[in-house]
Image (cartoon, rainbow, N blue to C red; front, side):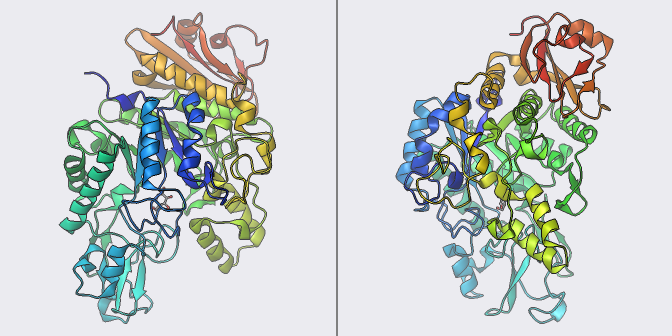
Length: 561
Ligand code: NOJ
């Protein structure tokens, strides 16, 4: 069976607000993106995933959609999307759009109608419920369930006009659609077909495993992987793209490996891959993303290996260290102060050499780091702002709250893309909606593209390896040294081809003791890619017994194909 094309693809994620601004209003836009396709093509990525550009009040930066079939004037026009599709296709590249159908904006006409009166036909398109147990609207504990919103506070918003609550798993301006209603599902299917007819090549489905829910009168219920979730996902696949090959990825918070196998089993006809979160949670304490605990690489390796093994026979992995919801990987897992370039390269190496489809979030290919926020007033993100407000109200000190947000906030990923060293980093001629990171004078695309030692060049090499050698795409993964606190080492094997990947993910040197059989097997193999190695490192890498900080390399046994 030939591979579907997305198994050899590398996806580049664009957050359009922050990528490139063509008209000087300080907000990135589609014409801006069109003008920067050379950068993505030079990197070697072949799929561009663009975060939402639909009309939206921007309560959650576009993840609150007010019209699924148009473009917000902030970002451009439908004609710009058509131009983007044509320009990408001309280059042999593809477009993946972001589909946000667990919820709409409260400004979506469907919700305006739904809220308008209890007997409106669209009432049932959302989740309306009376207060629990005969209590009055707004009473403590009267919410239909006691679920907490992903963005803080309860998931139920009282609507005094009708005396009922509506459900919002995210912000109150993001009411949840009721997928139990067949018209809702049919309308979504039709909308997807409309985008496919325009020429898009794939979809990223926002929090798609939350769309099936049960809510009982006694206040119990579920909203993650609910009872009809597979029926809904398969139904959407069948109705919208059938047997066509797209690239589809379902964002699935709380998904287990076992469950992901079901979602990504080609025979189940749901999604090509999912975004799972287990590896994102390794440095989260019990209270979630703002509960900062140190990263334990032993635990991280267990998680990564479990996903590699779990989807080896059936299904497929997505591979990512960052996106628009996560802090910058080099700041979170690397050492941006002392070893920015080396740590960015080492992290990329261990990610891109795993089996799955890698995702590169804009700026990651430059080693862009977190923004040094010095005041809570600078925050834009609704999640960080809500959390900070609640933490302050609970009596935590401002400095402590700021430190947590500086470690974990979503705004870090959203500061403008750093194109060059000029005052607004080449992002805009106006005032950017979020400030440009002061390090852009050092960390920027103009300084890196064409420099063989740059982080950018390293990403290019990694992507080239994937294109050159089938073992990178398809080789079996085996973790080595599972107990080592900082070395990530693994092999990839396919027929008679084999790769050894070794990286020291630490700013301290580390002793390396590979199993003898591995050392022997790879002793004479060529180094396909290396970084952070001491210039005159003694001996061939596989025979080395000590690794420099953030040293990483890929060796093959013989010449791979
Ligand atoms: C996940 C998206 O990635 C995030 O940015 C958004 O806030 C939530 N889903 C709600 O749509």
